[in-house]
Amino acid sequence: MSDAAYDLVIIGGNSAGLSVAVALQQAGLQRVRILEAGSAIAFPELVSEHQLDVGYGEPALAVDVDADGVVAVRTARHTYTARVCVVAQRAGAEDWKPTMTTVASDRILINKLPDFAADEDVLVIGHTDRAVELTARLAAAGAGVVLAAGGMDPKLLSPTAEAALHRLERERHATLLYRAVPDQIADVDGYPMAFFGDRRTPDLQFDHVVFAPSRTAVTPAEVGLTDAAAASGSVFFLEGADIAAIARAFPEITLTPPPTLAERRRGFTSVIDELRSEHYNATITHFEPTHSDLWVLRVRPDHGDVTHLPGQYASLGLGYWEARIDAAEDDDLDGKWDKMVRRSYSISSRMWDDHGYLTGDLDADELEFYIVLVPPTPDNVPGLTPRLACKRPGDRIYLGPKVAGRYTLGPVTDPSNTLLFFSTGTGEAPHNAMIVELLRKAHHGPIISAVSVRKWADLGYIEQHRALEARYPNYHYLPMPTREPDVPKQYLQDLIANDVLQARFGIELDPAHTHMFMCGNPAMIGLPEDVEGVLHYPEVTGVVQLLAERGFTLDHRKTRGNIHFEEYW
Ligand SMILES: Cc1cc2nc3c(=O)[nH]c(=O)nc-3n(C[C@H](O)[C@H](O)[C@H](O)COP(=O)(O)OP(=O)(O)OC[C@H]3O[C@@H](n4cnc5c(N)ncnc54)[C@H](O)[C@@H]3O)c2cc1C
Image: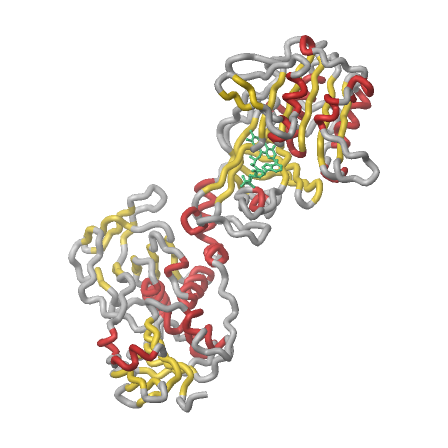
């Protein structure tokens, strides 16, 4: 331990300096002194909250280091010795000019407050610590403050500024327009009027407008830094060093890991509310877990109808700002935090209504989906399903306005045809809707729905299918769990290769009278690749190859066939 009187001396009682003091004291650092040139620190309430030791009216005049590496910070009153010094002080903002058009008026101020703020309406414009500091001081002085923080991002704020902003927002001491910034300040009847370019924010008139300049680094000369002190490695300028880097200078303390940027952003509830109301257009009305990772959900759009053909899909979306159920981190979350992640989902069916009739839910006011949680892998961080996993009935969501898809019953024109539906996992969703439609329309040819899943528990619709089988003798449901000890492992391909359908149900695979519908895992389907007119099938044999060997043909956009498919990835 050096013989310095302090562990840490911080020059500047602004948000950045206070953040270092609070974080390091919480981590166990004992002797921390803050030197503030003015008569108040940025957030005075922190003094008692965190027992801060502050010297007011003490600008640093010189920062030196002695032969033992002890830092000496000289003020007009005293010389403080410390193991480490942090310079949080900002440069003055004399040369700073706002980029937007403004009128010249003594009601428009740069980096300072009006003389009398009580009961005045003040607009603060800026998105850095300084903007929050000015807002907090105005609010404390009794002003009605609006902070136009267009582009504010927590990563530009130090922790104490961020906490102060949350407090101001929570206690309704300031109105925060996170994403709005005026593009012009004009003079209307002697008062500044702010014109906002976006449709969401009305133009507003104020008593004063205060511009908060962007962050500016103080120069070493402004705090009287000697060359020896600069070379010592014990003086940190906050522009270039973060709290973790400063904490590493004190091996005896352990910093609590700071919240991730995503967690910090979620703390700004009004931004999240704003983003949700801007992007979401539907409500989750039903969210029924088959088990923790597999859900049946229903979504009702605010406007518009949900007309669709059985087998089609819609798109669902949530913002990257939503919480994830897993601990994975999205690639480049910073860049896309306020964007949407959208995915396609086949429209399923509730199959039975409350009175025991098959649903005619094609023109209902909500859509049903059957969705599985996709876990993260080393190669892929799934975007949507881990966010969907945190949702519950009543929550808002994005539902694409257009339902689409060619995977429908269009090709089935003969009610006596044999119809086979093969799916993996949630690939049974469109089949549920198609099968209900067929049975409602009195299809009398055999209908088989075979589903490959891992466990019995992965069958979200088994009861509905068993009820269908009981009522319609031409319908058979064939769940095929591959990881149940009491069930021999069998894949969908085996049903064709080993003529299981003929043996169990007497069904001939006659291409002239049969349609095959397949949905889900592309490996089960096994589409061939067309290389200059020659078809190359995948190494693992899929159902398409087995059917092609029996005279079936693929249904393509140009050539119609009797093998219809929907790949999920
Ligand atoms: C037309 C169409 C309809 C679809 N309908 C459904 C549906 O009804 N239900 C549904 O759960 N998914 C469906 N999907 C898949 C869905 O669009 C998403 O890809 C899936 O929910 C994963 O999204 P994510 O953002 O969480 O993961 P992403 O980052 O998109 O991860 C994609 C990866 O997840 C895996 N994956 C994707 N879907 C599944 C799945 N269903 N089961 C197991 N692993 C999967 C694959 O390895 C894929 O490479 C459909 C896809 C298409 C193209």
